[in-house]
Length: 632
Image (cartoon, rainbow, N blue to C red):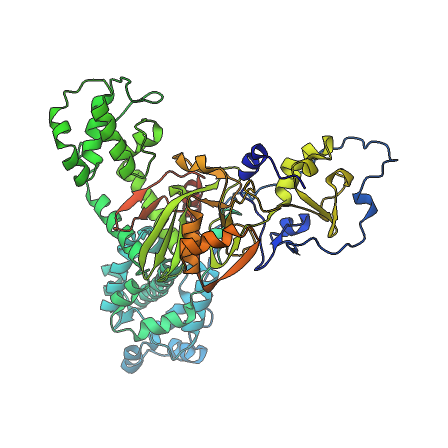
């Protein structure tokens, strides 16, 4: 077949591809597979053996032209209206032994009964506490067991252990949580000195309320406040399980409740860096005069002029590194504040752009201005809180070896032995074709890959062309199969169903996937790959694909994941043969979305919310806080 033209490959390179590949073959998804979110059937690199073709799928020359019908479409995942876990009343009917309760009610309690807590424990049945269903069940299980001790009340008073636990809850803001979610009212001093019945009722209400809030806190620290899958169809996480039933027993036996509760938070270096940054920003004054405004209309090119030039220089001097300030110290001292964008100032701007990971071309546009101006503390704090929430969705430790793609940064990082060993620019999905947020394991590198065109692209983008020009795919060098049998594009009935039709692009220099792809098989059919569209990596905003992740230096990443050399990767590519090579050992990959994240030196960097996911996450947090204030 004739190879695809470069113009066509350039267009199709935008469609990174939502198809998934097996260990030794390429595949294309059927329509039903796409709807179910699963992989299509595996398709060999050789043409499949002929099978009978559904006659309605091919055109009969004698048939009259088809009447035009509305084109079908495949819809992208949606963002949802977040539905928070609902609260219910904890059932306390079995919290007091009916025999003991009746005996105490019929006679004045003896000193022994009072000292043993039997008399006050019977008032647990009168307590009214709201909790989510799993927390309520854990409380009901614990307190229904008459042999279990009270946790927070001793000698008819709030215990020191309870006060220590409440101090941790009050400090929840330091770990990115909302202290209001865990607030518990202490019994008043008047209640403690009042009638014994009123006192004990208040203490038992406090006992259950604190237990419910502590369980909520522990659950939130371990897995986050949100179920990410309820935020959007682009989130894909198995929500962590927290053994709440055992938690109250652990708290009962714990000699240091403060240490135990604090230990439930993630302890990885990324979380600790986010926590330290949050504390620093909250301690800073919002009116320290350090914010610099730059009101630049359009872009400023070298040799141009702008009255904002003085503010640009001032902002770079304020936000640049110590090394940059030292390198341009003479310029900062001598700059007279003139509006001309001179070669010396261009050099300063280029160094600043390079330092911030931007295209170092000296052209000052919106991305450069954002880097110069920065964001105010309130915006940064919100990004940090959301980042800490999202980090709880991931494993407590990312691992000694992993790949981390941060979509808002348009970057990928390879870590080995807990050290960043490789980083490069990436292109991720456009806002209309967003890359998902999930974790998986790197498994395979495929050299000289076929591109199995996903049904979303066949239906949404190719079908309109094919209905007017059935020869389109033949002319562009694509391979078409119907029911597993190779056919000419011109013979297919493109007005019928496409569920048995697969389309793929053979390996070539113009293939939309380039020289190789790196697979971590997932239901979203997202992977990392090469691309013939190298110019996109020069852009600062790189949300430009159909969902997959394009690599600026795919050979280097392939060598890293295969634990080999770039020269060996080059030899594999040079054969021109389609070949899949399994990685020596599977390891994690995080296809992540963080607008605040530490670099390899632990310095927090901030990025734009390219998909508005932070905004959706904040709405979910607000809905959760509202649900938690549900009244009895």
